[in-house]
Length: 254
Image (cartoon, rainbow, N blue to C red; front, side, top):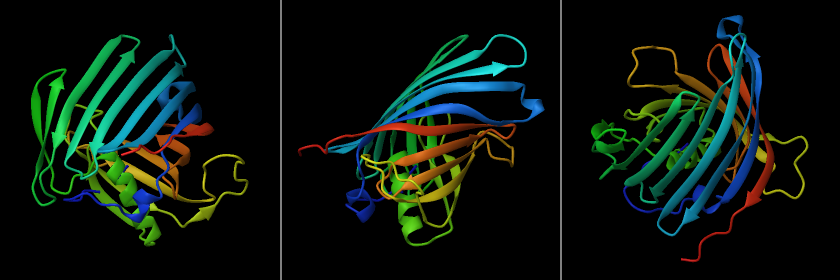
């Protein structure tokens, strides 16, 4: 989730950011008969912290899909990234452990200025380069851009985002930002702020000719960057992600 800048900044959104480690429980939401999915369960750990020269995200999710017929499919994914605070460099490493094997993705993306195209250099599974569209941002900056737009009462944000999760260039992310809401029953003794924005994001892959998004996601994004709930929409079935635990991470001593 985040927006590109040509020099380091300390926006109010970044100053309000709370480094954290969040634990989510996954469950099947809705499922059409055409999906063949009758059950989903799993968990995700999402860690987002600040380091002196950038933002680090460590994420792992373990998910099991149960189909109407045949054995369950298990997906175990680990995701590790570093993003420079000036928006110019992004390193990523992704490991996907599937029932049928393992896939790794590793590389680095580089930008010079907002008006010029950037380049992503994949090293694993093969050495390949892709051009990044102008104004491409990386995930942390995208989140801060969403918060900036939400606080300015903007309804929409469309921006290319690169996260390294697939062997492709940036995807176009179209976001619809709802009105600010207040949690009915704020969880006590947590770092959750009371106010949040419901945001619906649609992801459009540049590698596909389809006009429909490859994925839609709804997120309850709080003022300090914490997501209290998520819903993944794969068109024929949805997955709900419930926040069950959250831990505060200290800011670095730079």
